[in-house]
Length: 360
Ligand SMILES: Nc1ncnc2c1ncn2[C@@H]1O[C@H](COP(=O)(O)OP(=O)(O)O)[C@@H](O)[C@H]1O
Ligand SMILES: [Mg+2]
Image (cartoon, rainbow, N blue to C red; front, side, top):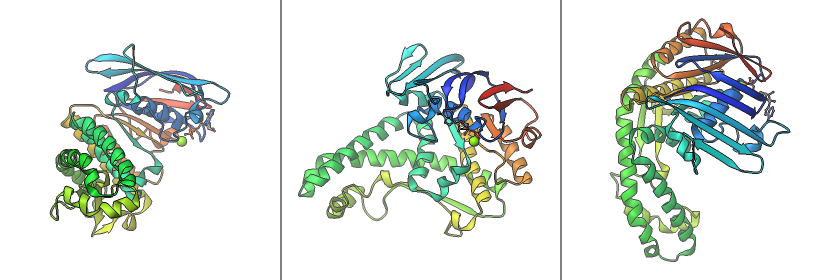
């Protein structure tokens, strides 16, 4: 899977652009405010149906305009698949995949598996477990075709259970949900654990290359302590507490990826630049996994590549990115900070006031 062509209309400061990408490395440079992040945002939107900078469509539609349009041609299963997305200020969304109207934006996710790395990405390590669950589930989604339906089902059950929790008086009124909830929770946890067990060696290997001076341990927590008691028991024991909280406090919705150095949280020990390297290691490991085991090509969007990284680390990173066999989009303020790191199989784009041109 790779993005061959992208046409952008009225998206942020990009009035119109029609770009043919390199199947491997795309270097994007331009001054602050030129539109580099907007270009990456457009690709991300086509991959996931949402922005990484805002959840408000109006923010990405060009000022004074009523809608934005994105059209792309994606290499998918040995052919070129057209995907078009339009969103308007009034809230209408039109998504067309291969000429057919698709009702749900979620339909997009299977075509372009995107990994995003920005200066804000360290929140994967310092932010809430939700970020790490999203990281893990990204991989499980592409690895295990039944995961998505399990995950959507459990989300619905939890919503219903939480609503019922607020109204009911005795635990037995919740049992209709809990039987299915427990079965699905076990399945989801097994799917996540299986994926993580396979991913872990790749993570450790990549971390050893990026941060050889640290011993970093990662561990998957499924959301409850299986050695202590079964989930069903937790659910009934926690009834009064959960009722007060207004939500179900234990289960796969609380899963986490614990990443530690000498048993300390990584963000207590590592510098910002080192945290960023760790995020790169985690995300590149997933890209490698996707390629080697799931036989799908990953698309990396890397915004502000050079920020917070010294030149030695930039070289190590560049080597891994090149070897990953992914399609990559890398932005930086100046061309000379990145063009010497990626000398082959690349196209260099210059962005200036929303205009995108091929440099060489
Ligand atoms: N909805 C919009 N319409 C037009 N311009 C916008 C919109 N939203 C943001 N901008 C402008 O687009 C420019 C490009 O932003 P951005 O892509 O973040 O630049 P870069 O990443 O190159 O620093 C900025 O000057 C910003 O003010
Ligand atoms: Mg930017």
